[in-house]
Amino acid sequence: LTAPTDMVDAACRAAGVVRAGTPSEVIDIARTLLTAPPARGRRIAIVGDSGGQSAIAADVASGMRLAVVPFSEPVTADLADRLPAGAACANPIDLAGAGEQDMGNYAAMVERVVAAGEVDAVVMTGYFGCYGRDIPSSAAGEAAVAERLGAIVSASGIPVVVHTMGPETATAEALWRCGVPTFGTVEAAMRAVARTAALSPRAVVGRSTGVLDRPLGHGYWAARQLLEPLGIGFPTGAVIRTDADLAGVSGLRAPLVLKAGWLEHKSEVGGVRTGLVGPDELRDAFRDMQARLGDGDYVVEEQDTRPGAVEVLVGARRDPQLGEFVVVGAGGTETEMHQDVRIERAPVSHDIARQMLGELRMAPLLTGWRGRPAVDVGAVADLIVTVSELIAGRRDIGEIELNPVRATPSGALAVDALVLGVAAHENCGQT
Picture (spheres, rainbow, N blue to C red):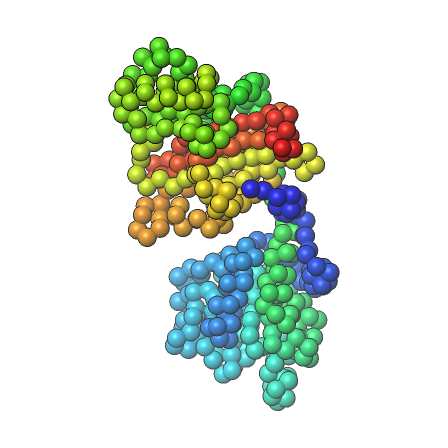
């Protein structure tokens, strides 16, 4: 689920390194950094002079992992008082003709959102930069607005980046001189914000040392024994190896799950049975599985039947060159098909873990899709943090996989787990 380029990108994000994709992008980023302060985060405001321009800018921003955050109610109300009826004021801002009425409104809107302290950068998009070219009598007024925008940046340290339909005009040149990077495409403008925001390295996160002396074992039950003391929850269960062991699981609450605990990929070979009710059904399932798969540690667990569950993958891996990484994604037996994952350098903070979850395509399922209750995202984030600290703190661990983690409004429960030592992990990578 993770390619080498994904890990390079994650390592760069953790270190505060800008990774450019093309030579022209290198030039744009370097010129931006020489002109304006970098964004100190990924929250942006968009100020446009048409609804279409603003909406496209918001889509491009989201694709570059920038957050077009809604303004607070006081800011939205204040903007509505300043702009014509029908203007969009919640972010993105659509001036709805106010720019044509008075070009000073471009700077006034930027000034207001910067003063609110709710964003890390502002992107203007649309016609500004073309007034002086198309209407020469407007040139002086447009240049004055450019200087005002530069003054906002100087006073606040919040960068303002402009996308204009006139990137070669005198106003565009004035914007650059005033400390306001200006581009001819909204993609280039957003990329300048996104790439320079990456220059803020993540805070160093402490590493867990609580299980450094616990030996690694093989299979699901050994993974449980390693992870449970760290606070990761699993269903109540027990190991069985013979028919005689079945008597020891009579206290478990049905329905039950039976799994071949030593297998890494259980579903493909019939190594999992769910919904077992009663001792006879459990015994028959065990005998059938043992006859097909042979002797080993079989695990019987109470099946997690909590309503509203969403299945999540939480994993980690060690790269011999780049170090440790934590992976989050859509879980279950279709994980490889969905390819919906996010990866970061380990260990991660709780905030970074929540950000990873929020960037998944499946994120709406976690926050309440079509009237369903939201799951306990905080509990899933805690689990991500724990796994990231474990891979970072144990040099003998090569890979960790919890899939699925069943997240519900009442918490997160791992129902399968795998922990591989470094040697086993490297052998998997070679096959």
